[in-house]
Length: 124
Image 1 (cartoon, rainbow, N blue to C red):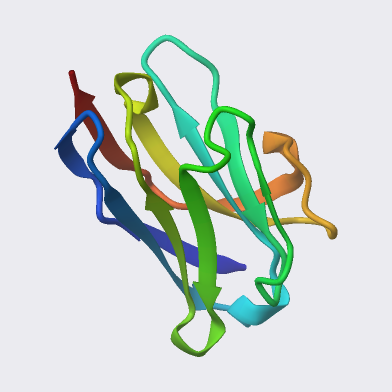
Image 2: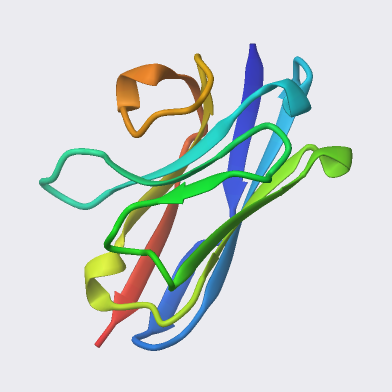
């Protein structure tokens, strides 16, 4: 099982940028497709993006397409989420997760290992 730790969250004004990191340890990171999810207060956890093992295929939720970019560096066992043009509706706890199947899906249930989350707050 892979262990995941997110970092990089914080408070930012609308229109600003943040880069989240997800550091992995344990089983070979490069063998996993990965995903980013987020959960706002009172809402269900929702899909943000996924990325295949090599980083060559990335899928985004419509709500973040064109603003967020997922990437990974397998040599550093780290995945990233570059978030630009942030909006107040992007405020949530952001989680990284390792997929239990390939190709990765948008479903929470298809991801077996999760980080503890990092808070992103976007002020208007």
